[in-house]
Image (cartoon, rainbow, N blue to C red; front, side, top):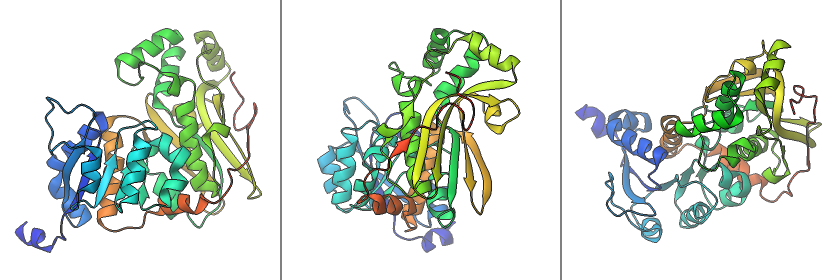
Amino acid sequence: MLAFRKMLRAPYRIGMFGLGHVGGALARRLVDDADAIARAANRPILLEAIVVARPQGRVAPAPFMTAEELIARPSLDAVVELVGGLEPAHTYIKNALSAGLEVITANKQVVATQGPALARLGRLRFEASVASAIPIVETLADTLGSDRIRSIISILNGTTNSMLGAIAGGASYAEALADAQRRGLAEADPSADVDAHDPAAKLAILSMLAFRRRVDPSHIERVGIRSLEPAQLAAARQRGFVIKLIAAATMHDDASIEADVRPRLVPDDAAMARVEGAMNAIALDAQYAGSLVLQGPGAGPDAAASAVLADLVRAAKDAPASAGSLLASLAPQPAATVAPLGPKNPYPAAS
C-alpha cells in the first residue's frame, strides 16, 4: 500500500454545493472508499469545502463556506453541484466554470435548458443528470459517438414507474402517490414527476447527445399519469399490455425530430414491460451497434452518487468531458423543431 501511495499523483481537490441525500452519500463514499477511489483515479480525491443554505448546527466532513468563498478557493480543481433546481444552481455552475473550475453536476434541469451555453465556458460533466447509475451520458457521447442513433425508447422516472405498479395492483392514484411520498420517491409537490416534466428534461439531454441537435425541453410534448385509474391498467393487462410512462424520440433523415413523454401500452413480453419499481431503462436503436438496452436504478442517493463519482474519477484522470464538449458544439444552433411522436408509435398511447 505504501508503494502504491508513492505512485499517486497530487490530490484532486473538490468543493461541493449541497449536502442533501445525494451529497451526503457522495461525501460518505469519498471517506469510506478513499483508497479504492484513489486507485481508480490514480490520485486521491479530497473534499475541501461545502456550501449549504443553512449550515448552523450541521456536521460535515469539510468546512462550510459561502459560494463566493468556495469558488475563489485557489486550491480547488473542481466543484460538484448537487443543489438541484434552476437557481441558484445555474449561477453556481456558471460562476465556477467562468473561474476555470471543472464542474460535475447531477442537475437535469440546468443541463437540459442551459447545458450547451454552460459547456462553452469550461469542462462540464453530467453523467448523473439522466438515469442515475445507468452509464448512458458518456456512452452516447463517446462510445457511440461515431454511430448514428435512430431512436430512443425509455423509462426515465422511477417515481411514476413505481406508482404505476401500485395502481396496477389496485391502488388509486392518490394512494399510490401517498405511498411514493412516504418512501421518499415523490416530493411534497410531485408535479415534476407525475406531469412528466422530469422525464422530458432527461429526454432532451439524451436527444441532444444522440442526435447532435439542440433540443429545448419545453418543446417536448408531455402527458402525465394523473388521470390514470386502476381499471385502465387492469383492462390493459387483460389485453396483454402494461401501461408505462414512456419517453421516446426519433430522428428522421438527420433532420426532423419527433419526441414526447406519455403513458403507453407496452406489450407484456417487451423488455420495457418488465422494468419494475424505481428502475429506469433506455433502449437505443443505433445504425451500426444495433439495438442496445441499458437498465438499472434510476433514483436513490447511492445510485446518483455512483454516477457523480464516475465523473469525478474521469475528471481526476484528465479524461475528456465528451458529453460536455458535444453540448458545447450545439450552442450556436437554433433549437430544433420537435414534433410529438403521436398516439401510435413506439407503442399505442394509453391516454
